[in-house]
Length: 256
Image 1: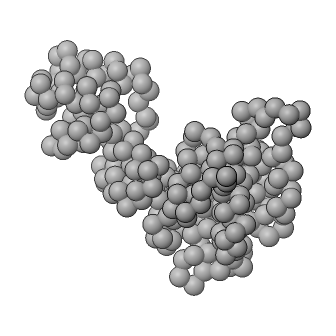
Image 2: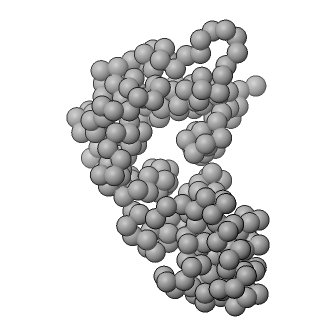
């Protein structure tokens, strides 16, 4: 299943409202359309509870479940995010291996075995992503019987992720890299102005350094890097928001 673009979704909703209501009454269809466009996913989900898999409104229900699950995660409501992701996957089970977002939620819910298994399934559909290998490592460390040494031995091999500073991050988690190498790869060019790309690189670098030190049990060093990722180099994408969620759940606040 591909996510509906905003334009495609608007055209879809418009066609529903005009003529073919599927299994929703016209007045309910109009309410669902308005609620979706307003971001009121609670109402969308409630009003589409009885739609069938064949209904054209099922796509809207699925999108609302996914987006509400993401918003719950960003609000640090981890159990609620998992519930929505579970409901989404129950309706489209073929999407399970693609669902790395549920893996992140499992980590913060301390369901490490489930998280480890989720990232192993994700590896089958996304084989060259350092982030997947790292989150698998993080869950493996904290799963019953896990350790940093064993997680390093089982670290998923990634060779094709060219994003800055992912090679250096992978080397660090593998035990052959250094914190300094990650920071060097991500550093700004020193002209006094940080571009969006440089800010993004620094956000990723400090997020994964923070997670690395959390895996080692070095709380203060972890907080130092998470603070930088969540506040100083904050980004408004999923992983940038993950840094902010991490800070909220660990009680890390912006430096004065």
